[in-house]
Image (cartoon, rainbow, N blue to C red; front, side, top):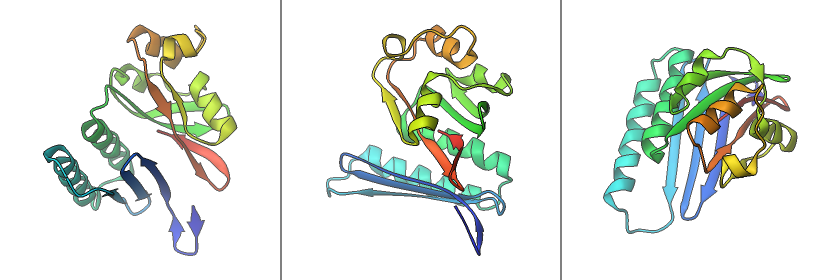
Amino acid sequence: QRDEYGEVLWHWGANNSFRNFVIADLARARAVVAREVEHHDLNARIIEQGRRLETLSRELSGAMPEDVIDRIARAMQAVFDLEWVIISEVKGDLVRSMAALGRAAPARSHGWISHGPLLRQAVAARELIAVRDYASDTALEPDRPISVLARDVAIHATMVAPIILDGAVRAAL
């Protein structure tokens, strides 16, 4: 989103009793992650996740833009206990992995490639796309490296969230 103060990336969402919001100012290498829990019986895991997000916010205050993306990916992986994390830059029909962790780590070396099946859907719909079983819910696309990698490492439930700037999908989580 761009206004008289500059340009920022932001994303929000809700899942059961959790509400989440992240905003990143890449030009100034700053980001804030906020999480709200509707109920009052906070368990140790939720408290630990909050501490990790607070630590990430402090770390990002002095980071370079490339570091911001990597740290956001690492925080997502740790907080949500994810096996597959990719943050991608999108330019038209091409995409490149800016951060790739866990089973997705080999995706970091692919450079600019065509969209895979989930990203194509997310770009077209301009909304979160989720699948319960990647192998049975998407067709094999042997010319799409991410599609092949996801099958090779047996990814099942996954999702893609588009990041929209100036009316265009510019990145994806």
